[in-house]
Length: 129
Image 1 (cartoon, rainbow, N blue to C red):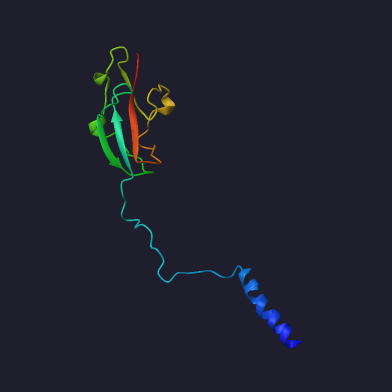
Image 2 (image 1 turned 120 degrees about the vertical axis):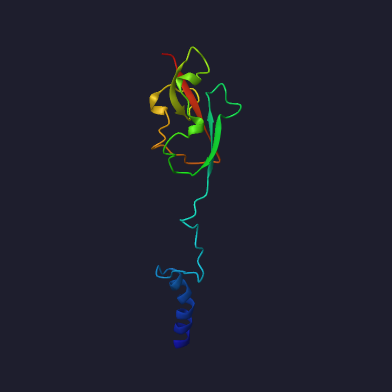
């Protein structure tokens, strides 16, 4: 009878150990992950004059995901003097929406950031006066 109890206990131990929440695996050499000091570019940003002139970007640059640019790059600055169409001479700003004139969609370089890559486009938005 003692042998049967001992055998039952030995057979039940792996089942009981498998149900335990206290077992944690800690690898000897864990993967260190990316170095927080080393940042890699994650996206190419293309700046276009507007949505109809979008074959070749005015300016293209590499940037980091989830980080605002801070300000518009000098090479991509547009003014009313750059207007591609005399019917729409007022430059509102850049937008990721190619034909939106809603000011809520104008890109704020100090706050807005890109969430996924590898290519992101910003289009110049022009309006009539």
